[in-house]
Amino acid sequence: MSQNLIDKINQTSAHIAKAARSGSANYIIVSPKLAEAIENLDIKKQRRKKLEALKLKNKIEEMNIITLCGSTKYKDEFSMINKWLTLRGNIVISVSMFDHVDKEPITQNEKITLDEIHKRKIDIANEIFVINVNDYIGESTKNEIEYAKSKNKKIRFLNDEKDDFEKWKHDFYDRKVFEDWNMNPDFKIYQDPN
Image (cartoon, rainbow, N blue to C red; front, side):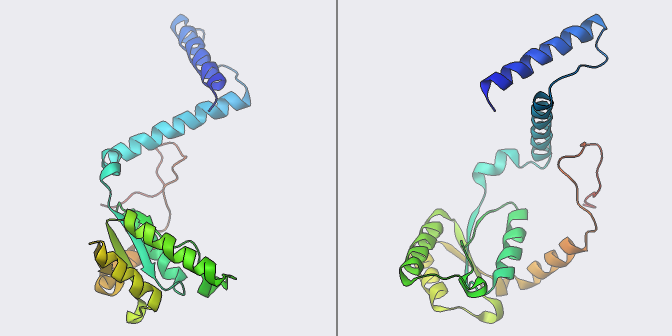
C-alpha cells in the first residue's frame, strides 16, 4: 500500500473521529479506492484476530517444516497430504510439477535441476514425508530418502500414518460448508464442533 494512500486513510480516520465527537458523523463518503483500502485493512485485522484466537500467531517461527517426497504420478495424494499436514500447523514444501501425470516435456538436464532443487528443499526442512502409495518408492524417492538420512532428517511414511490420514480426509470432506475469512467475524457459516 502506498504511503499516499496510508496518509489518506489516516486523514479520513481523523475526520471521522472529529465528526463523531461533534455528533455530526452519521456517514461519510469516500472514494472507492479508499473504501477498498479501509476494507482490506479491516480484513487483515480480522485475520490477525483469528490467528491469535487459534494461538498460531506466535507459533509461526516454531512451525515444523516438512518436504514431501514421492513419485510424481501420485499428484492427488501430494495435494491431499499437503492440505492435511498444513492444516495440522506445518509448513509444507512440495514438488514443483507432476511430470508423470501432466506429461510435462522435461529434458534430462531439467530433471537433474529439479532433483537438485528438491535436495535443497530437504535441506530447508526438519523432516521429509514420503508418499509411498501401496509401498511404491521409485529410484528418485530412494535417493531423496538416502539424502535425508545423510542430513539427519526425520523420515515419515504415508503407509505408517495411513489410518490417521484417511480419518482426517473423511472428516474434512464430510464438512458441508466452510467459514469465509472475508465475512463479518460474527457471522460464521461453519462452526468447528471441537
